[in-house]
Length: 249
Image (cartoon, rainbow, N blue to C red):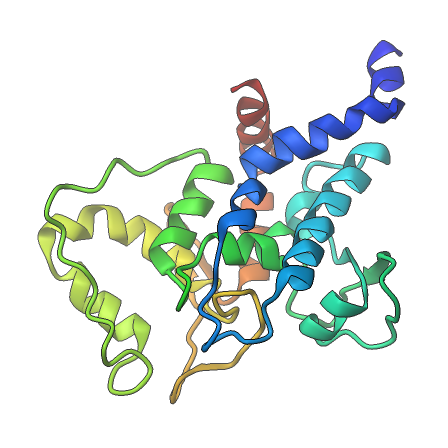
């Protein structure tokens, strides 16, 4: 009863801002500066809308005592007109946020929210490494070890023009020094490749169609971000333990 009272107090907003802000790395969104030439639609209003979506999503889960699995499987979210247009959702007007049904869309759960997708990208492109690492750390509670020294950087000059990101990463993983960690991170990150560096849905990267298939570290296959989330949710106790540990730390 005391916990319920505290959660219904206005002060509980601190749990949303502090815990969700740290765990989901929402705080990093304030310092992200996507390349304005590649992503001219990104501005302060869109940044604020992205952040508010995830904040309201988490708050709704807490206020309504929803299952922690909603973080992964919910086919709803909260958008205003600015974010709805960015997501391609029709029928939303005005600056007020409202709950929308995501059934029939490629979105659902925190992994497909633009805030998370933006903080796990580079300013000029997506990163299957950063996104895969984000999933390992924040959803699977299995952070990879630090990278070894003198890791060669990715050759970006031909990306989307002469070679796809997946092909370039396969070359990168051919280096035995890189392979041990990348074989776990990269397949998870590829599951999010249908979303560009600011979280907008796409079917191709340059002239190459996107292949968003991958496997979880325990070998279960998926073909999209939503399927990846569902696989994580299929082991509910592991995910609940992960969230609990994140709250305790």
